[in-house]
Image 1 (spheres, rainbow, N blue to C red):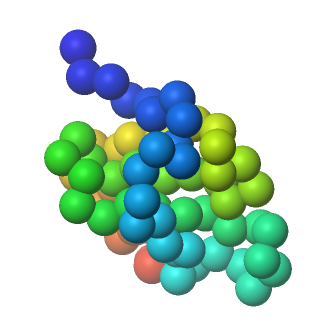
Image 2: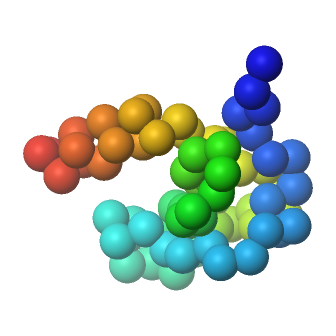
Length: 69
């Protein structure tokens, strides 16, 4: 079975703030591009906490839905 979380997201580097996050600095969703298992997503308020990993198709569907409003 594929792992769907990273218990401690701070072990990875290259996180970026989602362009759809709010303008408040501590209210952000961060994503990591080019991870071999999919797209990791974490809450910027807890960078040492877990990250969820979304499969490519699921992430693409989510981004399309956000763009569509």
